Image 1 (cartoon, rainbow, N blue to C red):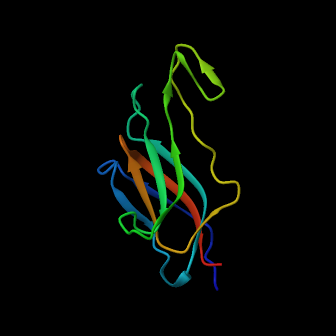
Image 2 (cartoon, rainbow, N blue to C red):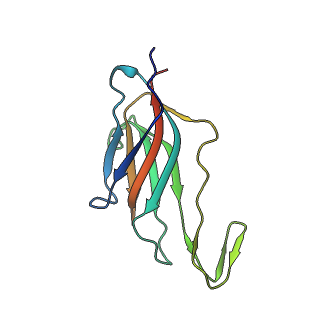
Length: 127
């Protein structure tokens, strides 16, 4: 099967930070490889823990599954993972995939409260 060039897609989710949005329509290509996910939380107060989910298929469909999920937290006078900071806010993110995530369905994004401001995925169709 033919493959497309590797491309990136940016999705602004400001108007619907916790909604479900189709990012990539695989059309007749049959599959999509997600190489990277970069996202920004909608807000990050000290008690908030926003998350992003990348789905293989429509999240409202019972046969869909999560390909990637990442969350972040704001620290200050605390520890997150192996990072210790005093008096300075910081964020801690999970790494992007080492290789890629494969989806045989359209790719969707979902923001989990308080949500996602924007997300960029790098992907290739087909292959």
